[in-house]
Image (cartoon, rainbow, N blue to C red; front, side, top):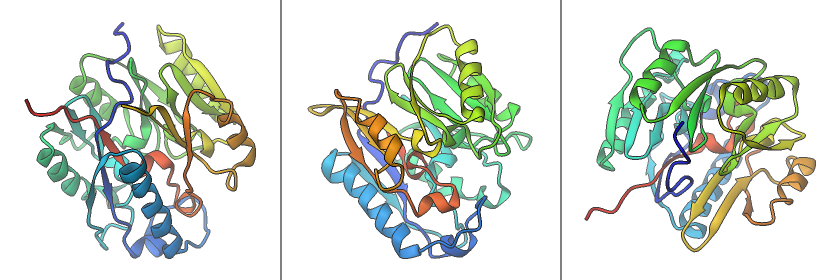
Length: 282
């Protein structure tokens, strides 16, 4: 089995997309809560500001498209590992065209772009957990077995295992990486069941950070020059008990980022950016 990817968590660029006005009314959602568009935009600006100004990433922000209410959630449109990008085929038909702008952006950044064209395949980036050693792909309402097979064909250096997702939109609705070899995982039965399957599938023993709230387990880990281990995570206002768990990570630079409004349309912190480690042109 491959060891930890060199430079796991190192990123130089982020692709984001502005939130369209149509998000408040027309974005897909599992609940029926009303969404305050102004608050969504404020959250999005704060998120972009953290990446740009606090962490020093170059942020490429694509314009919103009113015909695509969910387009702010760019993670679902592509999976990037090393210098290869797989442009996905979202499981929600209304989201398929979101990949066009993402493909152009990733091509512009000089990545080796692979497009998922098989019409029997579906894959959304929210179902893809890359641990630095291997991929876990959630089989959900949005991602199927064929999508996982194409991902495995694209990233041949890494093992790919599939995990059934129940009771959540995506695999990363209740888990993410909180550090090298450290999986942040929610406490629900569905989350714990998925973790057990991941542990059985893997040759590697992962540490786990168990959070009382499933949604809080969606966090963003980075390892940045001069800053070390960085973690963007939920705020104490949203999830007070989970925020206390993150505070135990004494070696991480902890950055709480608000996601309250976007959560109403099933968005998590990882959903709003595609992170890239672009090697300098020599």
